[in-house]
Length: 188
Image 1 (tube, helix red, strand yellow):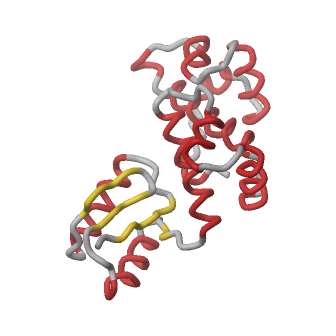
Image 2: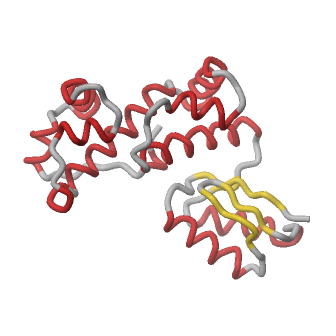
């Protein structure tokens, strides 16, 4: 019988690769892997503490507390939706994924993280905007297209949120080329 590991800060394909390599070095066969979750075919038994410590050294964390598990699932759902330019109805996707109503999830998230779920989503979207601006030489998106990709009704709504969070306009950010971006797993 396999064992499910829930892993905090596992937010990208590179994270998955790092964790696969670590688990395989410990002789574990991976049944499935997705952001924040790995199912291995064996029980961990003797490897558990070594894997937990090595994950911590790499900036990850095994999640064992039920509330932390829930919060991590919420964060991963939000990150995945925004990364895939699929931010329509994020809250309904979270409630479907978690199986609790949006009010309960929001209260639990606020209590655990010290920030509202709505503010967390906005902060992630702003980091995605920064990424789009920084990579603009490659994909040539204007601010309206960026707003559309992130499911804003208007680019002015995005512009107001961007300025509120960063203290500067998107144009000022683009001109400054001071790419002050946060890692997604560090946003709270």
